Image 1: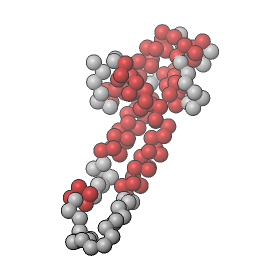
Image 2 (image 1 turned 90 degrees about the horizontal axis):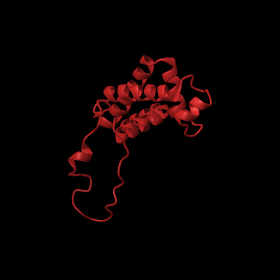
Image 3 (image 1 turned 135 degrees about the vertical axis):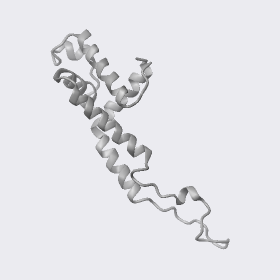
Image 4 (image 1 turned 120 degrees about the horizontal axis):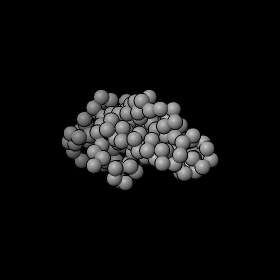
Length: 141
């Protein structure tokens, strides 16, 4: 797996604890769009008419790509966690979900937080990332 792809997947995993908040915020933005203030002070023609068809387009929740991507990421991570073993789930939680600062795999293994060796922990992490990439339709090669 390329390093850049691994970093993207790791960023997605780090955002996982906040995904529900992001989804809720985006749904609220769609349901309650903000209106631009009319700064046209004084004359001019057609004050209340706008000729911008893009801004007149109403985006529905089902059509919003950003919202659908956030939901896809949450669902993919949930499925990967459900399919993974207990040690892998524990490893992913400690590496990406905990807010205790960045921990590394060697630290987790040396402190016996994860009950496997360093090599096995890397294998479990890489397998999880490959599964996640597959569910997100990200090409790892």
